Amino acid sequence: MSDTNLASRGNWSSRMAFILAAAGSAVGLGNIWKFPYMTGENGGGAFVLIYLACIAIIGIPIMMAEVFVGRNGRRNPVASMRLVAERNLSNPAWRISAIIGVLAAFIILSFYSVIGGWSASYVMHSAVGDFAGQDADAVGAIFGDLLASPGILLFWHTVFMGLIIFVVSRGLKSGLERAAKILMPALFILLLLVVAYATTTGHFGQALDFLFTPDFSKVTWDTALQALGQAFFTMSLGMAIMMAYGSYLGKDVSIGRAAVGVGIMDTLVALLAGLAIFPFVFANGLEAGQGPGLIFVTLPLAFGQMPLGVVFATAFFVLLLFAAWTSGISLLEPVTEWVEEKFAMSRTGAAILAGVACWLLGIASILSLNVWSDVYLLGMFDRFAETGILDLLDFFTANIMLPLSGLLTALFVGWCVAKESLQDDMAMSDGLFNLWRNLLRYVTPVAVLAVFIYNLM
Image 1 (cartoon, rainbow, N blue to C red):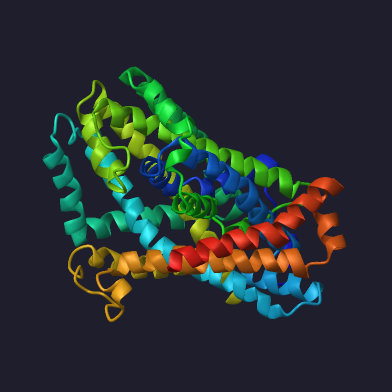
Image 2 (spheres, rainbow, N blue to C red; image 1 turned 90 degrees about the horizontal axis):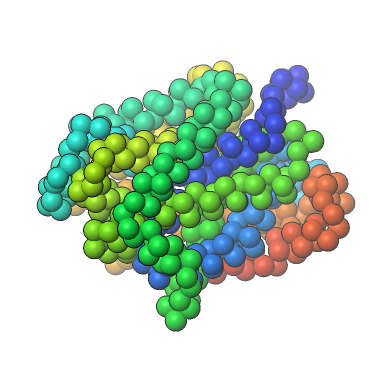
């Protein structure tokens, strides 16, 4: 990329614009879908406390490292890693971290778009009152019929991917930044609206106790490692996203403050999601640890039995759609950056090419839910004997690619980047800088390695 192109690359208009976009990436289905049911399965408040500690000692340090690489390189994630390595007299092979991240983002978006399509579908179901007055069997049948129909899944997958391509193709100012400034405030307003409605259930206090009263008798190593993994994945780490977003970050913005801001917003949404969901769960005598079905089966059932349920069910699934959309945008961005610079394409052409490729791969995930439900690519191995394509892609990205990319980035920035240049760029006090660098060098790699090994056991 020429210096002229770098000069015209553009920056986020403000620190808040970056925080909103990065938080939009971090705030996704992992916060509103996965965090509540993981909290439910792991005893509530104790899990929340461990999760918050992991955000501080793992999530924020790695996010800062990834943003540093992006801002220092000012190119796509792979090129930025190579340039930063060369400037610090290190082996350019460290770019394998970014290669893994970009590839992981591509694969994740392919099936994330399918799940995002579920959210779009449920907005329509809610708006027309399909859940009103229905029993558990009827609500479950709506979800079952959706998964069983490749045509309907393909339609919503196409709609969702089209929304993502549209935003990313418009570039930084008109695309990423404008979407973040609209979608993130709207997401917060909708979430607060649902939380306000949840206070009328009579079980809001029970939800508060469940989320914020720790019961350490229920904490096991399994609980701690799950909290560690959730903290790592919910902040969009290991996907080269923060490298891509960091490449637009001006030198006048403090990386540390920005990363802390993203961590706070990400955690706030996760906790608010719990306060929005669990009062309805408890009010209807449902099980808090329902797993993934909590959002697409349990909550529609609860909304369907309540006054104004149609309105608030629609608001909730619009909220879920917005969260998925902002995350989908961030997943396509590093892939688009790489295609744009690698093949000297226009932003629009690169976004369309990358998006269509993700869309095509997503068809395999759609078919694995119905027509190919008995197709197991690694069926010769006992562990994957009955693992379909979507679950297989999810396993390899979440349990192998993301931890590996995050671990390599932490090791590279912590050990290979010169302390002086790192300190100059970070513009932190000596105490905070040394704390962050020591976390990145010693604590974070060990913690990520623990998650990595645990997930492979």
